[in-house]
Length: 158
Length: 286
Image 1 (cartoon, chains in turn cyan, red):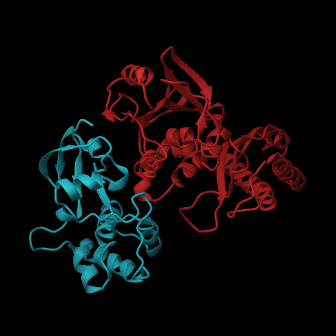
Image 2 (cartoon, rainbow over the protein chains, first blue to last red):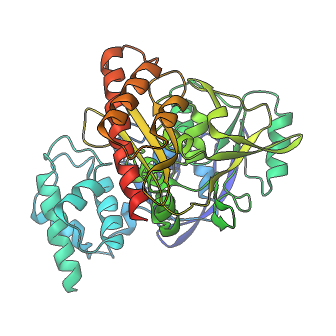
Image 3 (spheres, each protein chain N blue to C red):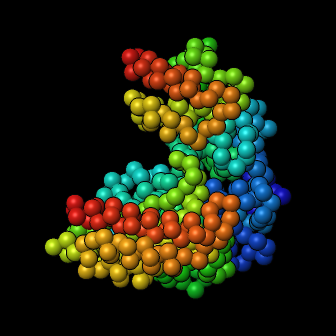
C-alpha cells in the first residue's frame, strides 16, 4: 500500500506525516506522532476514550482516517494545558478525584472542553448528555459531572 | 488500498465506476470504519467525498432544502430553518450515536448503510424525501425508500453516489415527528420506530399523511394504508386505534433478544399513534 502524505495542524503546530490509507487518526497520533493521550478503548466509536476535536467538532479519532486530517485543525489532550498551567477542567478533575484508572480521562476532558466552549453554563442534565459518548468504568460519573460543573463556574468567573 | 479525495462528483463517480476491487464511499465513516475494523469489508479504494463542492452544505432553495451527502447530523441540528420546517427529520438524525458520532455521521450514510433500524430513514420516508443520485450515466432523483433493498443492501449501481437528500418546502400547518423504542434512555439502536408527517387544512383536519416504520421489516416500511386512515380526521380515538392496528399488521419484524415479534408489532402501533399526535400538534401550531 502506498503511503498518504498529510499536512495538518495539531494543537496549533504544523505537522506532516505519511500514513497508510486505512490507518486511523488515533493510530497516527499514538504510533507515528507520539501523542499517546488519546486512548484506544473500543476502536468502534462507542467509548469516547480517543476523543479529539477536528475543525471545532468533537469526534472519535478511531473513526477518522489519518488521511482525512489533511488541511484540518486537530486538537488533542496534549494541547489542553499551557505549559505547567493546567486547564481549569484538568485542575478540577484532580480536585474532585474525577478519575481512577485514568484511561477515559483524556477523552472526558476533551469532550468537556468542547461542551463548555459551546455551552458555558450547562445544567447537570446537559453535562450528562454532553458526556454520554464517553464511558468510564471506575468513577460512576458523579465526580466527573461535579468537576465539570465546578470548572464551568471557574471559567465563567475568569 | 488507495484513499482518494476527489474535488468533483464526476471524478468520484469515474473512480468508483472503474474500480476493480471493492470500493467504499467515505463521508462520516461512522459505519464504514467500524466495518473495516471488524473485517466485514476490505475496500481496495476509499473515495472521500467531503471535498466535493456543495456536498458539505445545507442549501435552502425555492423548492425546499438540499442536504449535501457529507453534512454531519450535528449540523442539521444547528440549522434553525431546517429544524423549524422538518423537526421530525432533525430529531431523528440527532438521535444517532453520541456527540462524537454526531460530528461525523450523515443522513445519506444512514440511508446507504441500509440498516432496517436506521433512525433517520423512517423520518425521511415519512417526509417524502428524495435522494439525488449521481452516476456514470448522469443524475437521477429517486424516493429515499427506493434506496435500501434489504439489510446492508441498496439499489445503487456501481459508480453511483447519493450526492444530496432533498426535502420539500413546507406548506402552512405541516408537522412531522419521529419516535423510537430503546431499552436505554439514550444512544441505542431502535427496537422499533415510527415517523409521521402530516399536513392539515384550515379547519385542522388532516389533509395528507405519511407513516413509516423502522426496525419492523427488512427495510424501513412506508405504510400507505396508515397514512390514508389519518386523512380527513382530527386524530380522534377511533382513528388512532385503526392507525395502531394497521401499523401492527404491516410489520414483518424479526424475533430476537432485543424484542419479540409480538412486542415489536404492539410498540410499532403505539409509537405511530404518539408520533402522529406530536406531528399533529406541531402542524396545528404553525
